[in-house]
Image 1 (tube, one colour):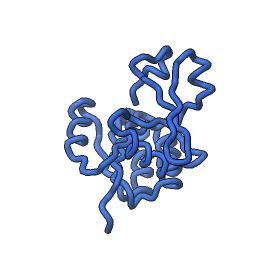
Image 2 (cartoon, one colour; image 1 turned 180 degrees about the vertical axis):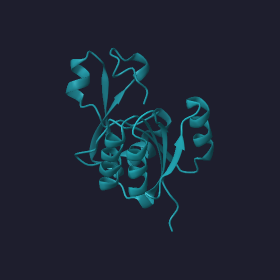
Image 3 (cartoon, helix red, strand yellow; image 1 turned 90 degrees about the horizontal axis):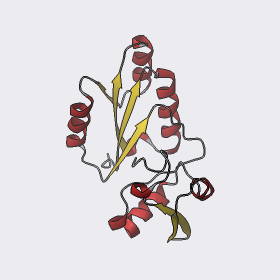
Length: 159
């Protein structure tokens, strides 16, 4: 099998239904063969529901959270892919993931890119008062936001 390209590290707490939606939508647009998925979960409720989700996705590795920082560092120490996707259980991909644009952006702008988010459009960011740069990548335009200078809790968030 081809080497995996992406490590998906997903965090969840008491939301097995949302986790199921996240994983189903992610795998709809990115083949599971491309990535290794780690789920770090804190379960206080819904143990049997989480177990049901985990059975539906047999290729994932599940870590029951005992120490968030240590658990996350342990997973990061195991990463052997070029890219890391941090996911959370309240995200659903509904309009595709343009992997070729993401990859091309890192190829062309990698020294100036910390991460790649598909949750903002230029109208949203400008409305919040943040400055963005239009950057041509291949035949596409991507938008660069300096999260350290973000004006809102959404745009200051580095992941």
